[in-house]
Amino acid sequence: MLQQHCTVNRLRIGGDAPVRLMGVINCSPESFYRGSYTPTGRIYDRAIAMHEEGADMIDLGARSTAPGSLPITVGEEAERMDAALSELDGTGITLSVDTRHPEVLEVCLRHDIHAVNDISGLADERYARAVADSGLPVFAMASFKEPGDAVGLAATGEALGMVVTRCARLGIDQYVLDPAVGRWVPERTSEDDWELCRNFGSFSAFGRPLLAAISRKTFIGDLLGRVPEERLAGTLALTMMLVGEGAAMVRGHDVRETADLLRVYEKMRQT
Image (cartoon, rainbow, N blue to C red):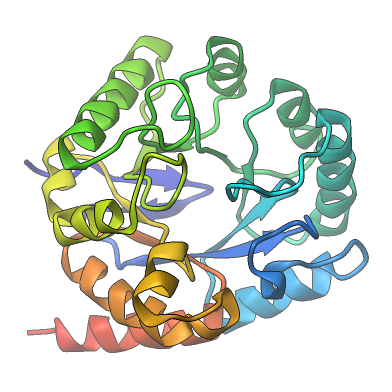
């Protein structure tokens, strides 16, 4: 199927566009990878550095979604997002916000944001409506009811089909699909994640741009016996394979290294 593209703040993703790079900034000290945490007051410098290193856009989150992470209130998440986004207003950097709460999105919409990263795949009706009403493009993850609750290849395909249906029902036509690689629910195993990666190209059947979000995740650490801080080489190796399988955008913590990888990939596919 011919892949449709998605446009975020004039940034074309998918179709005949080069593979894009989404840099990750977490303003949540609970993050599973401490190297991704950026405290208030340093968000601007981190974002500018990522942009200069090759990030096409920045994904900003204020709540850790890793299993077992310490919970925070919706109010705390909103306050963190508000403070972080205040540092980035007027920079011109393309931004997506990683949240699943309408109250947090409402605060984010007071700032210069360009997309929503919804790990619940628009499963929550109240939040889905808020996203649709915002008119922003969406990065939507494969989910039935909760983030990443599809277990296995067949279930992931089914969940992505539901996401496509939700987008159509809500009138959202600018979106990127995320196959939800990662240990989102206890039922999922590392082998489930490797299966999704081996079959990543099959998700192109939906005709939408695909997001590869595997940076430093648990299944890589399980294979290599490495903590998050030591998973860069494994992440880059897998990233190269996933862009070869059709990923239109890569979400990563390590912008400089991933940007170098993508430059090499683009050079190698020139004819």
